[in-house]
Image (cartoon, rainbow, N blue to C red; front, side, top):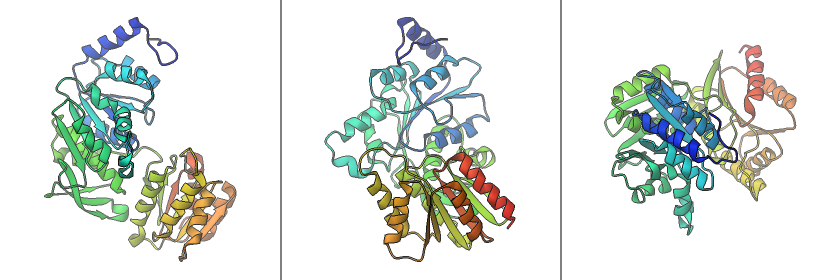
Length: 381
């Protein structure tokens, strides 16, 4: 089906899409938030696909156009449908949500706690998570307890069926006693009584698991089934923290675009390998946030990284150089390198590479990551 241009639909197109949605009587999920949407969708899919066919928006792209393309494929061949929503200003985004009307709406995170003093913070939060306003009748909202604005949404939506997840013990699905096991993943206690071990390497993925558990238990799966299926079937989206074991070297693929939050996540994940390796190395590109004071944000990231037990930090990129500067301004035992091109980067990796290292590559893209991977493979350590 052809759609109109400029993010608008004709009356005939709207009627067609509405009929597709009305004819689909099976679960429809909608996922919104700043970070973690793609990982959460892949995790939920790894469970649901064991019981049926899953239709979902293309990985990592929840645009208006991609959601309409996905909606156009909705038919009885599928047993579940998952839509990923990237916030877009304007009435057309709300119109899209009215067409899709998920049975289960999930919000990963929509704001930092320090934003809660802003006069219009909740208004913006509501806009960015409009998916919860368009839940199907008797639908379910699944919200992040630890994200102030996500949690507060429960006061502004009509459905009484709300489940919250997070590290706070008051959440319906909560994790405590989290232990990083390096290459062996992560271990924690679910809801105060059930020990869980997963092949994941960051606390952010514990949040993904909790949201997945809240979703899939409402779709008839037990916690034991969910854990077993994730261990068997789940793979992180490429560039979001995948672990490669190359001889004695652990290489963590965090090559997807870097933001302040995701760089922090990558660094903390790498530190989890410290007890299991001789040296840990963090390789960084520019962070992608736009706006003013870009240099200061990179410099502040350097200050943050200076406090972490990372042995080597290597930066590539104009703004990434400010990260290196921030690290260097704080006295520490770290070795810090700034490079101007990929060839310089590869030369430094060759020079510092020793057996039993952990290396994380953040924000440099898939091509650069694979060149680094080839250097390590050729070293054969």
